[in-house]
Image (cartoon, rainbow, N blue to C red; front, side):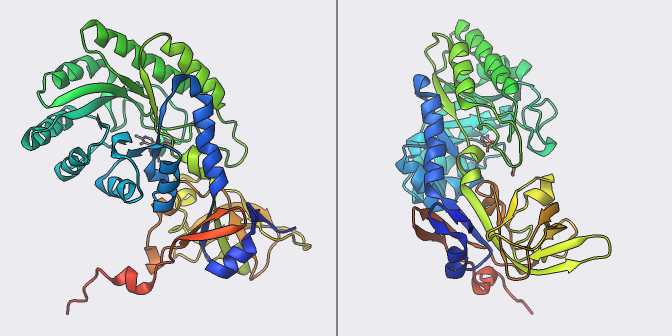
Amino acid sequence: MTLHCEEMPFSQLAQTFGTPLYVYSQSALTEAFAAYQTAFADLNPLVCYAVKANGNLSIIKHFAELGSGFDIVSGGELARVLAAGGDAAKVIFSGVGKSEAEIEYALNAGVKCFNMESLPEIDRIQAVAARLGKTAPVSLRINPDVDPKTHPYISTGLKANKFGIAYDDALAAYRHAVAQPNLNVVGIDCHIGSQLTDLTPLTEACERLLALVDTLAAEGIVLEHVDLGGGVGIVYQNEEVPDLAAYAAAVKRLFGNRQLKLVLEPGRSLVGNAGNLLTRVEFVKHGEEKNFVMVDAAMNDLMRPALYDAYHHIENTEEKHTPPILANIVGPICETGDFLGKDRQIACESGDLLVVRSAGAYAASMASNYNARNRAAEVLVNGDTARLIRHRETLEQQMANELACL
Ligand code: LLP
């Protein structure tokens, strides 16, 4: 038995493109997007893929072709969306610290909405829009103060986080925003965190936003859309994840007969389990207390285990007839934190090809050149064909912007 991505054997992909290699399944991307469209069909939502999860141009292009909008957090992400053929009119510009240059770029491009996170940001967007003689469509990111019950580094909707406008300050912030001549206040948004495995915080956040929508309407501030932020969590190991149909049903019930458009900004759940990281075993090292499987991928290719102690399933792509050993699966970087998996039962030997699962989201997009390692190549598999969607970086490219001044 040999493992495949769609109809392509991983071994063939590794032979053709080398390792480490990110491998994405096109049909898995399509299915994940369709799952949102189907579950929320009654609400006819605008699904805006959160580009930060994986900003590869081909992946953006694929979602654009499926009709997706995009959630961006920087001018760089907007440039990627436009380069890949995405529609600016379906772009939501999120992010807590937009620069004037980024606001100007997005206003000129004609994005659908700026999600604003603070009073100074409201003033900044007003000032840039006034200077350009434009009107900026805006939403306020309100912090619903619900506990998303996820890793503290990816919780964003609590009072103590840097994100959003405090719930109790929301009315005052809206009154300030509607008083600005160059802002058109069209929405309300939130994002309480990522890798959410419990539905309750998501529906509570929705309920709290809708209560505000009603209070605002009573004041004559009538909003067009509610943006509930990122998507649901995914299965990395054995997590119970929220059912999209149940989420959609809850949102539909809460919306009632309000005339509001729904916006969603899923990232991880659209790409996470469509991606794999292929890596070759260099050696198996039997230490005094631990065994180590040294592989050619490292924390620079997949930061999540080092940063969040995240679990990614790791398998040998070929069936082995030797007994498994208990080992840490580690990269060659000079850091104890450079591990992809800890205390795994795995049968493997030097030269074997391993696949790290769930590596479509926040893997390539968080990669770095640490230890002067080149960024890995990426391929998109469709049935029995594979397309290179990012060349493996070369050392020349890695050093191109540096100057060796004497
Ligand atoms: N919208 C906003 C405003 C966000 O900040 C995020 C993610 C999303 C949408 C997408 O959320 P998702 O559907 O992916 O849960 N690097 C971390 C995840 C950081 C998420 C940051 N914001 C990780 O690897 O787990």
